[in-house]
Image 1 (tube, one colour):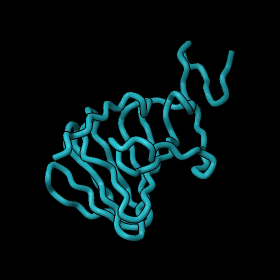
Image 2 (cartoon, helix red, strand yellow):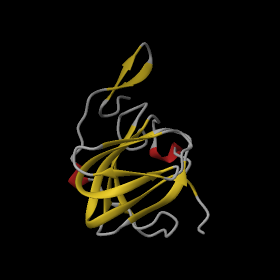
Image 3 (tube, one colour):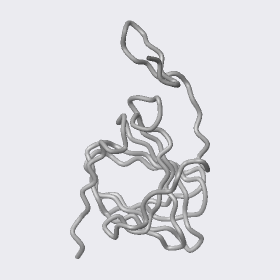
Length: 141
């Protein structure tokens, strides 16, 4: 049986190209205080799309919204799209806004605070599924 967007190569499933309209993907998050107030849209993840090897999504913050400090095994990138904010990585503050890329090494503690106009950025992981990212939130002081 062939799944939409999946082909076979030497008997193994291989992803074909595809596209995803961000506005058609439901917002998640915003309800668990451990995460903060961030909401996100998972655009590319092997459990949702015919893809492998990477995860891509959009993070969306209201004014002064937060993503609480945390760590996870895979490295991550952010690419600013709208608004502004600060990404703190292992205690060092880095600005984020349109056109700014931020790299977060594996196991680095990081968190985000949006500016007064909010913030929106793309994020990605070198993992097939978003569910493979092991979020471990830092204890609150």
